[in-house]
Length: 247
Image (tube, rainbow, N blue to C red; front, side, top):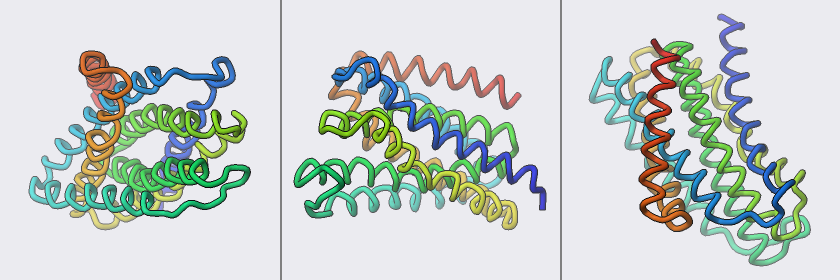
C-alpha cells in the first residue's frame, strides 16, 4: 500500500473541504451580500463542474463506455434522493435558530453535506485515474465549494450566526469529502474494472448538482445572459487548466 499516495488523496480532499469555508469570508467586509454575487459564483462553479464532468466521462469511456453510462445513473439518483430526503425534514431548533430559520439552516447545511459524500467519492475515484486527473478534479471541486460556503453563509449570517460559525458550518458540510476520498480511491484501485463506473458515478452526481441546483439558482440571481457568459468563460478556463495539468 502506497501511504504517500493515500496521504496525497486525503490532503487533496481536505483542501476541497477547507475551501468551503472561504465562502464566508466576504461577510467580514460586506455584511449584507447581494444575491447577484451568489449567482455569479454559482454560474462560475457550474462551468467548472460541466468541464470536470465531461473529463471524467471521456476518461472513463476510454476503458468502457457502457460502464460509464451505468455508473452515471446511480450518481444522479443518489443526489436526487438525498436532496428530497433533507427537504422533508420538519421544523426544529438549531442552536439559536428556531422554527423556519432553523429548518432553512438544516436544509442548506444538510443538502451540502449530502453533496459532499459524492464529491469525496469523485475525488477518490479521480485519483484512481492518475495523480494529474485527481488534482484536476480536486481543483474543480474546491472552487465549486466556495459558492457552496457562500450559499450557507447567506442563510446563516443574516439570521444572526457569526461569520466564524458560518465558516465552521460550511467546512463541516464538506467533511465527508476527505472521509470518503480514501475509501473510494482504495476501492477503484483494488477493483480496477469498476474504475469507469466510478467515473460515471462521480460525473452523474456532479451533473445533477450543476443542472438541478447551480444553474437554476444562478439564473434566478444573475439572469440568463450573465449565466451563459460566466459558464462559458469558466468552462474554457477549466479546459485550459486541464491541458496544463493532464498534459
